[in-house]
Figure 1: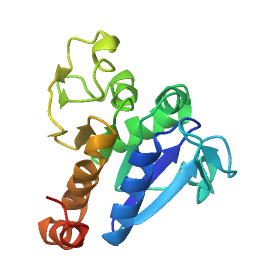
Figure 2: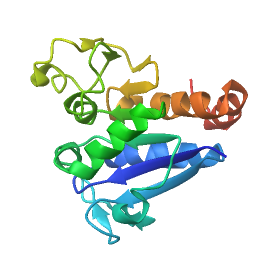
Figure 3: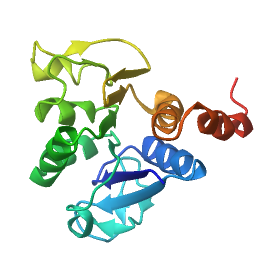
Figure 4: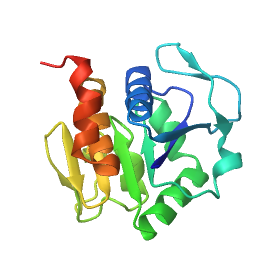
Length: 184
C-alpha cells in the first residue's frame, strides 16, 4: 500500500488539505496527517480545525512514498519556516520519492532547491517571488516533472489529488475513485 505524509501547519488551505486527504484515502492510500506544531488541532486559513493523526516528530524518520504540502497562507510560510520540512523534502527527493505541493506551498519545494531545472506551477506569484531563474514556471493546473508534482490552488485540488493517485496507484485506481465524484 502506498503511503503519503501530509504535514499541516497553522493557516493551511482547508479545501486543498481535505480534498487531498479524502481522495487519497478513497484510493486506499495510507495517509498520515502530521501536525508540525504538535498533536493538537491545527487551524486552517478559514478557521476550520483539523485534528492531525500524529505530531510530525513521531514520523519524521519514517519512510513514505510521497510528501504532499497543502498551501494556504500563512500555512505555506509556516511549513517553509520549519527546518524539519526542508530536511524531509531533501531526504525524500534524494531517495527518489515524490515531493508534491499545491497553491503557495510549491515555494517550499523551491526554497529547498527541489524545483531547480524543473517545470512547476503554483498560485500566481509565489514561485516568481523566489527569484530563482532555474525554475521553469508554467501556467497549468497540475505539473509533473519527474517525481515533483505541483498545482495551482483550491480550484485545482481535485485534479491534483487525482494525479497523485494515478502516480501512486495507477490509472485504473484513479478512474475508480474519480467515477463516483460526478465530475464534468
